[in-house]
Image (tube, rainbow over all chains, first blue to last red; front, side, top):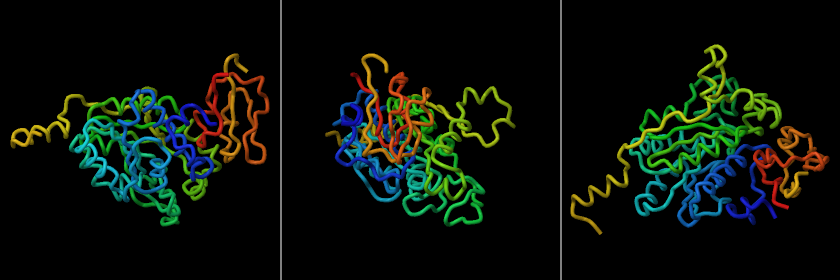
Length: 274
Length: 64
């Protein structure tokens, strides 16, 4: 029998999962489960919504109310759930391609609405499931099967994008600094409003192999050395921060109107109280 | 091993990525034939770092 946490929060008959050896998604999924457990949400009050991609397999493994939806539309489905059942804690598990490319518009408009839900983006910097095509978070110059000479596009900074679009909680964690990632997800769940937490994942099979990043262990060491907390980064020189990935809570805005509450006010004004 | 706690493994779930062995502060674990093996159980301090970083939930610390 696996650990108590895994027994209580996952569908163990579906395990082991299909993710590759060393895939960071397993670590991030456990972080989400641990965060829900730590916050103490009753399972029947949690709805996990995912889209399509490696990340979105998580909804099949997590033992809550779960919905595995179409590509890029996880946040749209989640919005429907939250509008119909505001008492549920809606948590979206999505990937970089799902959230920022195919679902990019859904992401920014949900940010703008500030609807109370938590979006955890498992960012592996590539489309893993379909064979390693470059994604909106593939760093400029890095390779994918569709960018054999290097990606010439700029890459999204997902927390910054979300903050600018109106999300009221934005943060980034990774696979190496596990307690921090769990804490960031917990804060996102507790925050009333739209929360976006990017989890920097590890894809040894496609991103790692295409870009000669070495083994899964080498990629984990890369995170250890290059993912830096913003508090520590504040004391570092700009030259030292070249190529580093910043972790931590980037923004938190309290008191901005929440979408479902605002919608209920409109219903009240229109005389449609149930 | 720390009193009151024990290190458990589920070799069938292990995919041999090696995170647990690499980042174990006491070098308790090794990977043999692509599976985790608790090589030096007496040195384990039950810190749980292996459990935190195991993507496959194949190793964990529990109350003895």
